[in-house]
Every structure is written in C-alpha cells, then in structure tokens.
Amino acid sequence: MLCNRLVLNFMILVIVQVQGYDHGKSHNLTEMFEFLDNLERRSPSLTHQVLLKSGEGRPIKVFKIAQDGVNVVNNRTQRPKSGRTNNKRTPNLSSVHTQKKAIWIDCGMHGREWISHAFCIYFIQLLVAGNLKFLTSRVTFFVAPVINPDGYEYSHSVDRLWRKNRRKFQTGNRTCFGVDPNRNFPLDTLALNSQGSKSRVSNPCSQEYDGPHPFSEPESMAIQKGLKGAVNQGYQMIGYLTVHCCATVLLSPFGFRREMTPHYRDQMTVLEAAKTAIEANQEGLHYKYGPTSALFGPKRGGVLDWVYLEMKIKFAFAFEMRQRGPGGVQRFLVDESNLLATLRATLAGIEAMTGTILEIDGKGD
Ligand SMILES: [Zn+2]
Image 1 (tube, rainbow, N blue to C red):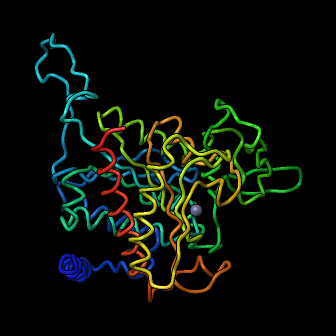
Image 2 (image 1 turned 180 degrees about the vertical axis):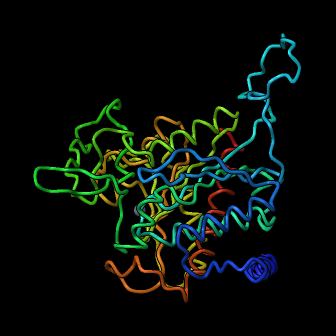
C-alpha cells in the first residue's frame, strides 16, 4: 500500500511537470476549464456534458470517466443502426449483470470553498491517468467539478467569502444576490414530522436563502439532470458525494428531520471508514460524522435528503473537508503549503468510501 502511494505521488509530480497545472495552487475558472478541455482532448476515457448554463451564462459541466477506460454505449440508449425495427424485447437492465455501477461526485456548490473545486480537478486527472484503476475497474465516475461557476468566479474577482450563486433579487429598496444551491432542493412533497425543519429561509439577503421555489436554480437543476441522465443511460448509482469545506465533518441524511434513515448503520459504516482514512492523511485534524440534522440541527432543502429519498441512492454523503490552520472565516482561505495534502486526504476518504460501498453493495440489502 505504501509502495502504491509512493508510485501515485511520483505520478502526480510527473503529471504536474508535464502538463503545467499545479494542483498545489488555486486556479480560477478559466484555468480550470482550459486544463479540463486539454485533458479531455488527450483522454479517450474522459467525456463531458454541459448540463445547464448558470444564471450568468457559464457552463455547468459533468465529466464522465468511464469504467475500464472505455466509454460504453449502453443497450438502453443504443438504437439499431439500420432502419429495421428491433422486435427483440428491450432487456430490463436492472436485472442484467452488465449494468454498470456509478458514483456521482460534485464540487464547488459554494463559491468560497476553493479546496472543493481543486479536489474535483485533481480527482478527474488521477482517474484518467490510470492511477486509480482499483476504482475505475469497478465504477464509472460522474464528476461535476464546478457546480456553481458564478459563485466561484465572484469569489475570485470580488468577494472571497461569497457562498451562493449570483441571482439578483429586489426586495423593496434593497437589492440582494444569490440563492444557496444546497437549500434549493424540494421537500414539499415529503412529509415533515413534528421535529422537522418547517421554516423556509425566505430572505434573499440570507447566506442560506433557499430561493423562490425548489429547483428554481440551474445549480440544483443541473444535479437533478445529471443524476437522472446517468440513470437513464442504465447506470446503477451506488453513491453520491458532494464535496464542501470547511466544517471537518462527514455528513449523511437526514438533514430535514431528526430521525435516523433506515440505512443508518450501513451509512455510518461507510463514513467511519472514510473518516479513518482521511485522518490518517491529515495529522491533527479530527472529523466528526453522522446525519446532518444531528450535527447541525434540522436544515431544509439540502441535496442529501433529495438524493436519498427521491433518487433512492442509499449512500448519499457530504464531505466537509478542512485544511490544517486557522478557524473562523480564515478557514476558507487556501493555504497552498498544505493544499496537496488535503487533496490526498480527500482522495483517501473517497477510496475508503467507494471500497466500503462496494463491499456492502456486494452483500445485498
Ligand atoms: Zn459548502
């Protein structure tokens, strides 16, 4: 294992030197997109889709890193090449062994959380470079590196601590900007129990404004579109992860009510494995893990509840990664002297998460 890690670190160094993109530094949106475009041109296993455009017209992209390094056209979406009608019954892929397992990872839902964006770029490059074959031999990854491009750009150019997107709202004489994408998922159709969070965050000036209505924002819509698109391609989504910064916690559903999910034990088994792996790579940092509502109190409209309840993805998690260093708002600022170590720790957490999900998934429910 140590040998593998040394080889991996050497490969990262080689990649950085050859391609001129330093994962140990922060990059703006243009640099990130240019890097990914170049990488895609050279990598047959890497393809992208623009899910939607942001409010300011920037693309919200998801990258697919194919299993075994080859992009598979699934039977469900493949049409006969000739004009003849295919009279064979369409196979039910949910019961076919060839169904591909997939995991979705998104980064940058909040503009100021720059280590999140940095991680997804780093992760995509390692996946396509073939350094993580023990993951890509078993799972196809869908990685959305910058879910909230307007927030990231604004955090770079104007307000370093900007969290939300940049939608404009006029309330009386006051103009406020931004919806929190991670409060914009629907729960209106789901029963809230007496302990649940019933109140909306209806003030557009709030850092956690949930928007005019669920799925009012391209960022939340893009995640919905991407996940449903993957399912429609015949992928079995075995995991969902949204990468954030900087609360030093690993989160599971529920957020909107103080109740354990029916899959609580399995979810905690995965998070405990991830926590152990992350802490082994980040000396001096201690991660808590558990349901969002238990660690932060009830929060309504978060992505995890929607992914778990509506998309039926049992393993839906958020990693709130943290760098070593100061607390308070200072924790959002990137310390480039330990950025790579943080990215490696996040990677270790995802390796442990994926391995444990596959192990549990293999045993059946
Ligand atoms: Zn966040």
